[in-house]
Length: 359
Image (cartoon, rainbow, N blue to C red; front, side, top):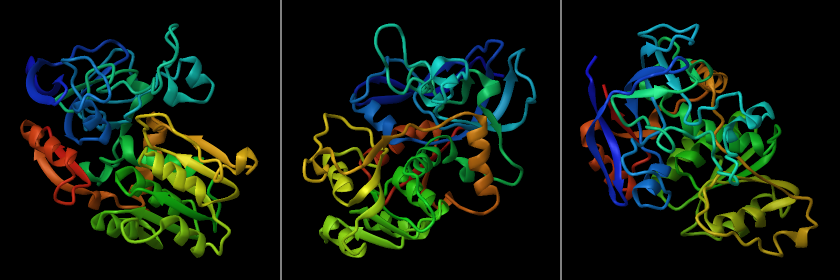
């Protein structure tokens, strides 16, 4: 095994570049994974732009598919050479938050207030997955074997966007026959659309302003697609539901406009499930909020992690319930990742997700 490896490193706002770094050392509870495929997330673009602060010198990325290179002494039930994924959120399952049933928020309390997304370590608080090798902490809780016959690309969405999008549908408490509106059809919103279909929604309405994304939404389960450039989305959703409003609205962008519109189309007693990462304070419109008397539920979700969550997601793919392979629209080698960031950050050429080949 080489002593040095290639890694995508955050240097300063506007600069993530390939650099040489030492292959990580591992402790007794860790595993070293040789990364075969990874990808770029919208959160990584926030890091690149300096909108989400991380330490200079950090390796970025939180969506690993790879092969176990080395196991720590305490890690049982795995073998070197085994194909695995690990969730973007890799909880310890020992923290107060984990034992309280909220494992995504693992480690959020540091004695100096609260840091949200506490369980998100890769490319946030420790070196991440856009590299040839990755140290997976608490490996026994977080490594999930890839079923035979599934390609890297088929499971590439599981660590983050599939888990997050599905969480949006799960938190929305969708029942069989419900009507659901999903605002924004980027990778997360598309997975929320697919999740709503798997939950048994009767009518799924997908909203976006990019033709390729609306077409993909149809492919993944939307019954109606609305282009916000061409129609009054709120009026059309109310018309489609006979004026009743939808049972659930999922917000997958993180903008004031989409949040407010998601609230405006909710039925009395409906659920607004928010997945977006917001960059500034939200204002809740009084009329849509029914002055606080609408019996609405507003819920937020962070990507659930851990090996059991990953096993379930890969099971959905293995049985053919869902194929997210078509969401991979572009391919790059790790050494060309700067070009991949440029494409992804500027949303050119119909890009949805980029497969980065690390090995």
